[in-house]
Length: 333
Ligand SMILES: Cc1ncc(COP(=O)(O)O)c(C=O)c1O
Image (cartoon, rainbow, N blue to C red; front, side, top):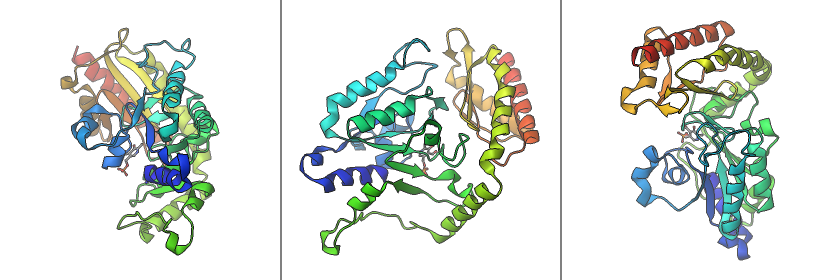
């Protein structure tokens, strides 16, 4: 939806703006499984199979630091990856309608966190070169990173925002695309002008989904969910910090209550475990036997507990995951 809305905005402006039909998207990005979302995705394993069906997008490097796509070292890099983005935008600026990004974290790619300040600089580039910024907050929205939206962590307001998952607390399916007043107004006009956005889904605005979302938002206010998250996030960080020294923990990436623990065969060389060893899946299978339900992304163990989890439950979750990581990584050497 956001892609279509951004494109339609420039089309309605007319003149030279009509040339603005392409989008910048990121390697390792995941935005969903429709052809449009796959087109702006960047995970080869999911997306390559459909390559002939996709529309062309302009890809820029993933803003991840552990395995820097530009082979630079932090912190001396000075965020050179942003300069790559700017160079690419400059090359294509007249044909660019917008840029789509997962704020702070590329989730499906393995909880790949971007360096602090990156999102703010992306916003500045979008302003400078007249691109609409689309923030896909489907994973990061509704408290997941510790603020209501990931964008808030860097004081960023996108032009379009895709939200879902946490909007109903996970109780009913609902998604929404938010936008600014100027974009909304571009779709207003006289009936016969047909400026309307003529797209929707069978269950668009589903009343039950919306009721669940409203109830969920009330809980956020009434139970001060965001305030109560702070000690939980700090607890997770404190408990996981010592794991960074473990022989087979390559990196721990945390954004609020969204954590990826990357297991590696060789820490110094950052050598991944062979995928067929299914190290992540083994840890999760064993944790499940002890009552902890997790899902790995390859060799990355993902912790994304419900925001209502208690410190006691977090303690149990972390203890069991830690024990199983130790057990599996010591057994398979
Ligand atoms: C960042 C992000 N965008 C989009 C999606 C896809 O959402 P949906 O399955 O509702 O299309 C996901 C799902 O995991 C996601 O993490």
